[in-house]
Length: 255
Image (cartoon, rainbow, N blue to C red):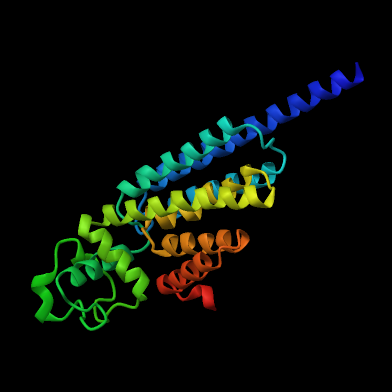
């Protein structure tokens, strides 16, 4: 009888944790969708309020992750689908906090036109005819690009498909999804609960800066995560190549 009661109490406790996670996920989703329609420059207080709400829900979710049973693959899949869904309106909206993504499109376009983004200054009147309505929105047009070669090759590849901020952000969301898969593999190798992948997938800043603002950091994150997986699996060549590419995207990994 006592054992049955303990099992019942355990099941009830897990159900409450699962329900609390659902509330946290719904709150983050609500905030992310709202942020897709709020311009921080016009309504900074509203923007910050939604970010704080998402952040608070995320912190509560982090505290619950260790109490979730690792065997419920369906529930975890639903949580990951939810994370993917709230990235959609962010990707469809224009970037709110940064216009770096327009520089990425410009750099990719320049390369495809046979120009060198390390030499060409966007504001130079001599290249005014190379601009499009998209690339005219880039910032710091008085300086050439600052991005390493790995990032530049990625920009070129994406613009070969479509020269738009939406395409660039879509490519970063793909990187985002691949990071989730790599982290799941890392957790499996380490013998940790797969629920911990939500520490990444539900992070509001990852969604805002990746799907929302379209930052190249997600490409670097994918390379670093791949490096970690390759090291754990003792794939030295893969680890070396992935780390070299990570540095080629951003110099942060060697700092």
